[in-house]
Image (tube, rainbow, N blue to C red):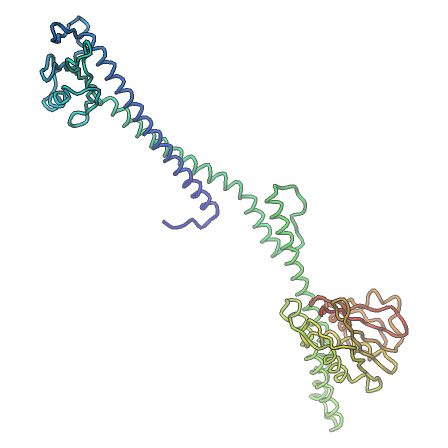
Length: 442
């Protein structure tokens, strides 16, 4: 028998199994008690008949004599009176029953059943003056009792079957009604996650279990919506950031195809295409690093000083007019992030600082209170006061006329990547130039 697949089927099967065990135990107990009760009634009836028959027997000169009366016809049925082994009175019966009754002559206060088990016999001694003079044997047909026990057994089995059927139906219906809100909520959550990610179950009063399920579904829908927003934002940032270098490559290729250009112009165009392609590669690597960190795929450790030295060596400044230097931390400092991730966080900050600095950019780091702090400071004009709250928003640039052709995604990507690994990027208070601080786990 296959195991039910649905929770409703399993609960119904469990309820029917438990009810079957209980009903079976009750049915057996009822029939056993009924049989014992009827057996007790038969035994009591035999004793009463033996005692009644003994009152009709008198002793004269040491011999027994049965005294007949007009009402003894019913009493004589299944009645035997023995004096010793000699039968004074016999009831009409088949030979098997006669032999069973004869075997009880001389015995006292014992029960026996005739062959076939249809008649029960009882032997009671006859005493007069302290002497045993004979034996009274009475019999009782068990046919009516057997019919009663058979009917009771069939009736109890039928009743048990009805009870089990009722338990099955009631459990099936009850569990189905109890699970209907769960099915409805599941269907709603599946539909909302596909077409209406902003829908929620909210704070509608529900039973404790359903309320907890609703809160779980709301949290799941929040995560689904956040994931969708993350994908949409990543796609928008990817298309936005790649648009400029891709447009530059397309324009240079079109110019090369439409007119003849000098060797110097061709070399300059190819160099511009190479720079744009490298820019696109860097953008893709940064965005992929953000995506991996958001998915918690990047977990490792890195030497902060080594990463800062690598970032400083890789940054050209702005046409070489800005010096990018590293102030080593006072002690070896390890950050709890992958070196590539740390580089992708710091590099946009260094590029931004080099673009706005007058002459120098300083990178420094220190560890305190279980955190690693990386500082990127420049000696430029700083961030305008009206742009401090918006500088980390995608597409927002503090100074629009600085000649930079980017899309304003460097700082937002750096902050997103830092937050994805359990840190953050903030702008320090102004003290002559801009200073960005990176907070990371040790």
